[in-house]
Picture (cartoon, helix red, strand yellow):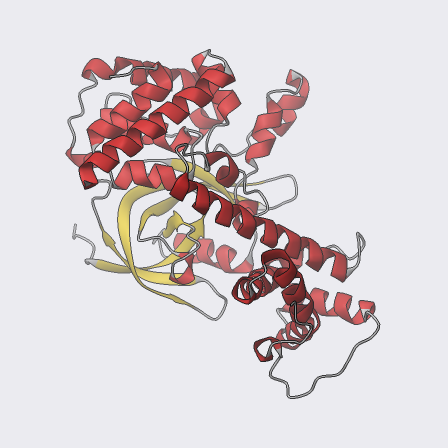
Amino acid sequence: MFKEVDFMKRAIFPLPLFILPEGYTRLRIFEPRYLHMVKSALKDNTGFVLCTFEHDTPFNISAQGCLMDVIDFDQDDNGTLLIDVFASQSVQINDVYQDEQELRHGLVSDCNAPYWYKDSNNEIGKHQRLHDSLKDVFSGNPELRVLYKQTHFNRLPWIAARWLELLPISIEKKQQLAFETNFDNLLSFLHTVINNEFA
Amino acid sequence: MVSQQQSPRCEPKTGKYTAMPDTPSTELMQSLIAVAESRDKKAFAFLFEYFAPKIKRFGIKQFGVEAQAMELVQETLTSVWRKAHLYNSSKGAATTWVYTVMRNASFDMLRKMKSNKEENISEDIWPLLNESQDTNHEYSDHLEDKQIKRYLDKLPIAQREVVRGVYFQDMSQEQLAMQLNIPVGTVKSRLRLALQKLRNEMGDQHD
């Protein structure tokens, strides 16, 4: 099997949403340009890029996004398309342009932000409480269990990433925690919220 | 102080400008529908010509600054172009709908200005409530409504089953409180404390 070329051209969908690698989410697709995007993502098996909607960047695109695989689809009661997507990898977004139907495209390349996601120790160790509380969240919410075809409760970075997605804080703060601070700070943040630890 | 004169930047580049003393309701409605159904650029130009000066005047009244008034014109009319398909002519006049879009855009701008200011001066990092509830946002239509999930917990089980399967993006403070089995007030103060700590840590790094 060969490795993908370094740069891939992909459609980009900016949304006020925060997602990290190996996260899942469900989207409602109704605008023609995004229906088109999903259609070609499935046809050509390319996926598309989901990124955070920014107010002050060209085409509202954030620097980093996630390459998404469409793993399931459905319709809501009004017949609108629902898709379940999985963040297969983190990507950097460059050279964005809009086509005639205002769908954005860009050249994306594999990136390892947040760097702690792959590089940190997987051991749960003293962070058992983060593990347990996230398990509780999953068992208390059938939607999450349905959405997540795969979970990795044995990996600390996976747990931290899911908690960061779920917490009720602004997207800006989530980005700051994920990309601008180190893993220890992030864990300490989670412990403060979840555990009330002042460590 | 507030000028009634239209800025040349507002004028459409049609070369013609006809005064419209009465609201051309039917034309506006047809144009909006044409934009929704066939992305009709001429129809949009007509809407632009009619609404831009009015939105600008509102913006100047609201913000007192022309640049921001122009931003409001742009925000509003971009939303009109993108969201035209959401307009339902049986529910009201085109003007009503466009002015609602304008008002929302204006609230968003005010909120943004306010939270920027708070970021800059306050001890408390507290824009998180405002931002995450930005439900009028164009793109929030694509996210299955978080609010639904919030109300869901208040519904009897039978009804809940009907609404099941909604999107799960992030939790409300209430949900987190329930999940951790602590009062909402405690969640709030922990979040505040955690954000404060984060800020101190990041500050230390940068110093």
